[in-house]
Amino acid sequence: MSPAAPEAPASVYATALLAGLVRRGVTDVVVCPGSRSQALALAAARFEQAGLLNLHVRIDERSAGFLALGLALETGVPAVVVTTSGTAVGNLHPAVLEAAHSGVPLLVVSADRPEELRGVGANQTTRQAGIFRDVAPHSWDVPAPTGEPGEEDAADALAAEVLAGIRGPRHVNLAFREPLSSAVRMPDVEPGEWQPADPPADEVLELGPAPGTVVVAGTGAGEDAERVARELGAPLLAEVASGARFGPNLVAAYRELLGAAGFGDRVARVIVFGHPTLSREVPALIERRGVETIVVRTAGLDDYNPGRRVARFADRVVVDTSREPDPSWARRWVHASRQLLEVDEGSVASIGTDYVERAHFAREQLQRMRAPVTRRELAEAVWAASWPHDRLVLGASRLIRELDRIAPGKRIPVYSNRGLAGIDGTIATATGIALAAQRDESRPGVTRVLLGDLALLHDVGSLLGGDGEEWPRLQVVVGNDHGGTIFDGLEVARSADPALADRVLLTPQHVDLATLASAYGWEHRLVTERGQLAGGLTPTPGRVIVEVALSR
Image (tube, rainbow, N blue to C red; front, side):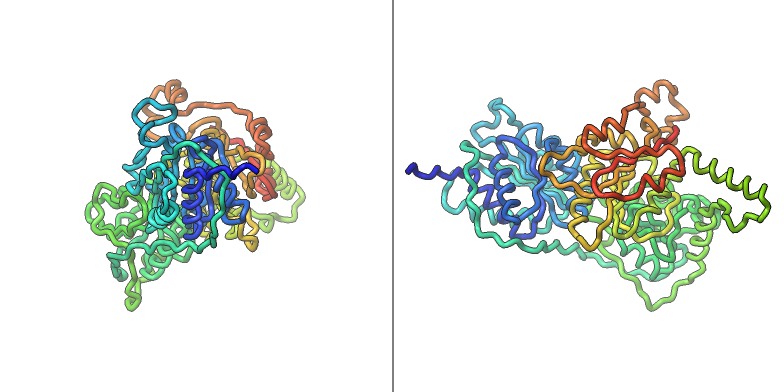
């Protein structure tokens, strides 16, 4: 009988590190294939087999990073992404940047060459220790394990250290020597409950009602913004991805009113939650002389401070509810906003009994149903189709701004990567959100993604899932206007040569999305007229690309 093969120190250490993470509540690991990281990947697969964690495998590190970001966004628990050495680590940079600026807990674990192979031109070896230091200052460069006593305890201690107080991205760079793996010896592991870090409360600011106060809610503001606005009797200017787009004080048409006499010009105090990014009117208001701005800090890398005019920052605000606010201030804003958004489309009740009149009305309705879809109609339809048991993910395109202009109040979960507002990884992020959301069987909803065609094509690799990978209920709604038409609304459209702007900004494309969907195993639905919208957005199990034809 041949003796058992010796355990590779790489596998022993990798297994102990994963066990330490699982004990402290980590539930999701995203793995990209690679030789140097094989000990981590094989240990993660064994842990999944034992029912200790959820494993997700992706071949594209950029997609993997954003998948982990989406998982962390939905669960609030740090997600782990594992890569091999070299360019693999660099491909995580977009997701790490977004996590840093949004304050999303993301743990990068990269494999590396040992010390003797660094700086000598060894294959797939670069200076990856501390590669994210500017946006992820918490990083560890761990020497290659050698099998000495105490290394397993050291790995468990490292797991505790990297998770302590995590609020953004962190990076663990692990050196491994050959042999790079051996059979995984499972430790005794009891999965723990995640204990989120207590948010800092060093500066709690008490506020009372005051004339001319408005509350601004940017991405990630959450329900606190709505509560504070209500208690202060202040208009709530809530972006569509704020998590605060509801309540009696909501002002959906805030952009128009900030520029209107008797409204924006009477604002004296602004209280900001989250990260506002969808309008120019909000930063212009804050930069205006005579306006006092208070910003409630987020977990993101930078404090929001347009023009460096913010008067005060606080970790949390509380309202002095002993003082009654004047309800007329908020009431004027809410009433004016509702008037601006009203659209009179007629109704059957207004139709008379005359046959000619009825026939004329029927023809008008038929023409309307056969008319092309506008961006506003697409945005309205997606918003109307989404409910509290669903998830809505908004890509960086004209459509999120369109929705922000017209969406009425509704208490639904909305996500968007607005930390840096890039188009990177939208589908991957949504996939992570959907995978985590559908674990709650009491909420059998669908995750919808609303994005433009370039955002889809930029992240097209995230449509791919290998054999054995779990796929959630996911509906990718693509407003296809064949290029980056968001530039049509910017100053460059009035100053640049149209032919040059089309080439380098619009970047027109004519990809056959039906063929693309088929190649990746997705259902494809094409919507070319208004009457098809409701049916196109009907949720079904599996993965669906809903292509909505839009004109430039």
